Amino acid sequence: MGSKRVMKIVDNYAFYTSLVEGRKSIFTDVIEVNNVGNNVNILEKVEPAKHLSIGDSLTFTVNVKLKNHNFFQFKLRNQAFCPQHFFRYDSDGDTHRNKIDGIPLKDQSIPTPHFHKYHENGYEIAYQTEALLNYKERKALEDINLCLKHFFHESNLRLNKEDFSDVVIMSNTLGLSLSSVDPNANIIFP
Amino acid sequence: MNFKDIFEDVKMSFDGIWQTKERGNSLEIITPYATTNNRFISVFLTHQNGSFVISDGGWIYSGVYDVAPRDKDCFLKILYHYQNSFSIKDVVSKDGIKYHYIKTSSKVDIPSKIFDLALYIQNIVSISEIDFEDNDEKETKALFVSKANDFLRSFVNIDKIKFNAPLDPNKKEVKFNAIYHKSHNDLTLINYVTGSSYSNFSNSIFKANTLYEMAEKTVYSRHITEKITIIDTDALGFVPIKIANYLHHLKGQSGTEMIEWNHREVLKSLLN
Image 1 (cartoon, helix red, strand yellow):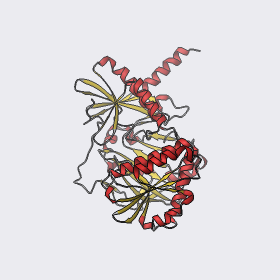
Image 2 (cartoon, chains in turn cyan, red; image 1 turned 45 degrees about the horizontal axis):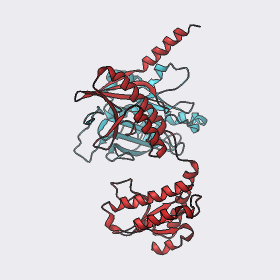
Image 3 (cartoon, chains in turn yellow, cyan; image 1 turned 90 degrees about the vertical axis):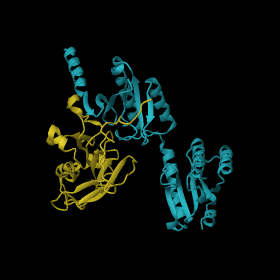
Image 4 (cartoon, helix red, strand yellow; image 1 turned 90 degrees about the horizontal axis):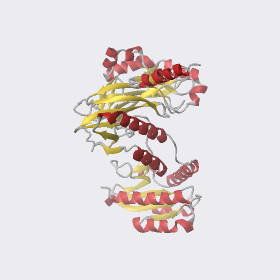
């Protein structure tokens, strides 16, 4: 949760920075996201990953909302270092507040899509890349596979050494893509 | 010092937060109200059957704000207080997500309703961050679960027992501390009862009773051959004179075997 200060990151910020910036690898060409995880409304696939210079084992998680495949997250975790995901992408969802002194209130608001990482003060912050700030590119990145490539670049992650993975959602079904962007759709409010 | 200029800046800063996103037949309105976990609140405006509806989009209960509303009494009291104060209604979608909303037929009331719903969401999400369970209770439970699990592991065939497992995979809320599979069609449900205070201990007994009742309503009920309740006699909440009637009721209602932790050796003959 965003409000919790992670002291492990504060105390080891140089390590944290190399965790985010250093080259990381995963080993699955096609990531099949077929099953729900802890939350029954969200599909989840966890893939093993590795940090090449640090050598630590990591996990790379893809979450996709069951009823809206345009609502997805990519997350990186190093369980041995800290239980929180250390780097994340949210395609949709709530607007994050970067509550940092010196930043004007209106600039503290970072709507989705956005990336999350940790500030040196140990709090999670959100940011948008140049591509996400550009309307046309942002629209294109609603495609999960284009967005995965963007995430790979931003987090310095690759398939093996230099390649990029693909994501397939619900490959065990007819493959209908669901994208109900309106959360009020199909709800009768009595 | 010109405070008027500062006030104008405050007003403009707040104004700068408001944003919108088109979402099909709804408009997402991002408000300047933020939670304690640093999320700006969104509300969703739509028009349905001649009325304006402002909802939370199901975001509180589907976990978008990264919190899970609690089911503790003290949390629910706060929730109902806010719900009543702001006249918030709720409805559950087909896929089980609870939506909070306000309706109005008058355009002039929309800003006021958005104000109320945003404050409501802000409070509920922020309060959901509070851990209402006291540390003593958490530790008592964790310690007994660990002791009892270790004891069962010491003599039961590990392939035949599942810890912290649901009886029916489709009803994850009907979960037992352990389920022992004597054979494929012969199940023993095991519940641990403990508590750091008399009141927590009683609640643990009530929970065991409810779980046994719910288990009888699952499709697996005909395979349940035995129920065992392990009573933590070392817990501070174990006050026999106060809880005897509750334990008696539990035994009468569910037909469970009651095994006191200080007589745990009996389990070896029951589970083999």
